[in-house]
Length: 378
Image (cartoon, rainbow, N blue to C red; front, top):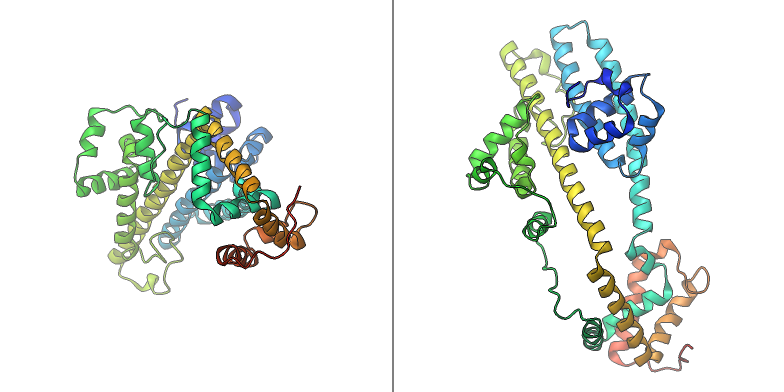
């Protein structure tokens, strides 16, 4: 068996080998997703694997790819009277049904990730919220305290990560530091220095070829240009394909079957190419997701990030100790909204009401009208 999977092979592959195959190749993941949706012989361990949190977003994208391929296949079969139409339409329905399941699980994953995020944990904790708002009220003092804590933890000599305009700048920065393993070949160097037209042609060839891939396009340093080329190809093809948008095929227009044969075949060919471009766009998303996830995990585990978080927390506590009355005012404003002592409801965390409370409190602190009787908290 080669590294390129077929649907019939999925049921026989050991789980550790299967994980390696779908990690290395998005095409293999599409094959496994298709097998899960359309075959009754896929082991339960494989079905469970696709639904695990770490695979859900990739699984959803793979089903979108499989659905796009099957849709353009059914359109061509219907036009040509192919007897395989009914069977292919049945596979498409099953893939779309699985896609609905994957969408629900992906939404649940995003919701859980948001609820477990640092922003949400701060937003539901009255003490931490009060500290954050106090920092906004006294930014210069907080900056001085943070500098002191950074020096105390010997963080002053560590350069801060720069601000990035987009994810591709972040990836390029990580490559320069060696945080992302990205070997450079002569073929890659040629593509990196090539003009946009050359990259667009390479991207089009990669989309047309179902058996070979231009791996240089998937190199971390090429992802931004690959995305731009895919976007341009999608925009250029949407019209000839009679597509709903460059990102969605939609249904064929009502007048399609009245078109001259040559024109109709041209529409079907354009739709097939657009489906391939959309598939590559989903593969691009997966490449970026894999890299950024690895960078986030590395950052969370780095001693510098842990020490910096400690410095920020200590500086925030010292600021509250310097301004106990102001801190108590913020806590008093938040207390009526608490579910229980020190904890705010999730519904308030990102609501307009929270923003209004913050605006009012900071305005009161800024203009000095806060100096009513507020007992400092112990």
